Picture 1 (cartoon, rainbow, N blue to C red):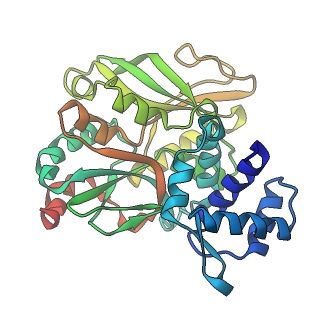
Picture 2 (tube, rainbow, N blue to C red; picture 1 turned 180 degrees about the horizontal axis):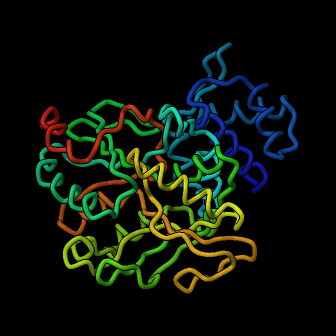
Length: 335
């Protein structure tokens, strides 16, 4: 199979995966052309027949095609260079898809999903509350999903519980709805001393990775939330954003409003054109450091409680979220 053919097959699989329903060849062709692929519907049907034979798609007749488990696996094992930049694209996609309205407090926000064994919830709860209470979480709200419940592409397995934490990309969506475009530059590991941010010790640009930076830091054992929430000195996950300099006052105003409803996530907002913690900022822009959404579950790994996280897992209604102070009460139904 040549590279051109493989790229189109992967593009078709991504379209079917994101649709989460069956699609006909005409609809798939439209989306491929919108993505910049020069292809006819006849050629797409030819690709689909081959993908049916390979077990990547399933033909449902007049209803069209759906992606199979084999197709999902093929996407997961696609060449790494095909995935580089995918995270940055997904950030933009989720920013536009979220529908949360700050004024009415209604609509969907972006959340991450972390899986943990039901039997370990009681031990995990006080650790997560510790991160929230210290102010190192993206807001004060979270969600729980029981076995069999679904978020985006992920279904919570039996004997597991899904912990939904608000993703910092929610901030991008809120700012965009108020006419403020946001550039997400990188995810980083921020060192704290005496509860104050001092410097970045590691950074990974969103454009140059196929994985969420905080997922990498967590799995590599590079974080130190036990120290950050204890003595005040440690390493936590954050994101670095840039916004137009003219919007600085408005961003600060929105940050205060978000804080009041449990979605506060701005740690530091810089000044026009000035470096922020030694990170250069573009002319006419302001740098901002936002709290990492996966921080409340990152501390679990440090305490020996295994979990598996998926950043930007999907969207959930704001009404599904509850204050972290209610966590002990909420987990009782899953124990």
